[in-house]
Length: 243
Length: 43
Image 1 (cartoon, chains in turn brown, red):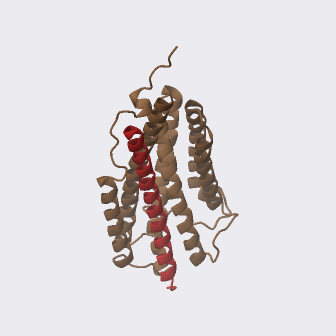
Image 2: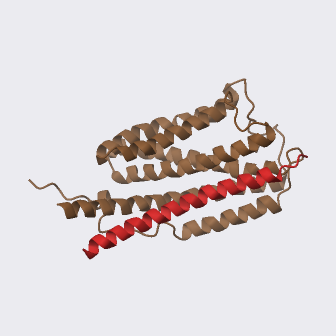
Image 3: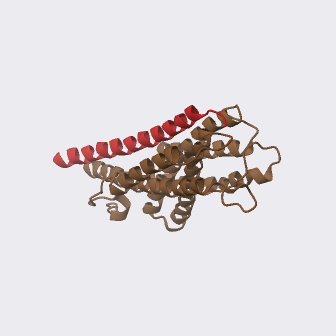
């Protein structure tokens, strides 16, 4: 009995895959460059922290795309568990990899900022930092696990379960500054009534950074999804050649 | 106000480097897959 041919949506075979770094990526690169110019040259420094406060625009803006990507990964994981659609698995994988990039930026820039303001690169008893590092390891583990499992559906099923579980960490990270008394990490102040207000220039740069880096993450996820299509085409071609 | 421009510069360089390295890995992996596809088709 011959096995059924792979579905086009499964293998991506016979589909022309568009460039992984297309015009969306280059628009995002220009937007990031413009944001850097605005943040460094045209946004005033903080009265106490000086220019170190401008790390805010790359640090905080790395966390939002990371959280969104992990949220989409969890959603796609649920879709895969429900429908067994390989497109959901591919998108989940793409989101996980891009989330890891943004988490790495968030952690690295946070450490540099902490060195200036707290006098230490890392504070282990600060729950927000420790939970964020734990999330980094979970997402890295998700990707390592994917590389270790050969069988497609088993890999997709296991990673879908881990994908859903990893997203459950995000509320704890966000609420950790409220839940734990012993803390050094500041609580949110931007757009919070009753808290110290940012200057209009700072607020515009801050909101722009969210938009720009979220756009960059979308460009990365598009590219990474297309890379998965290419990889599956190569795999299908090799299996076709072997058969 | 403390003098902290070096730290700001370091943070921006680190962030940009990570994004550039990831972009290069996307591009290079895609190029490798396309080469493999073209080689297999030629054979």
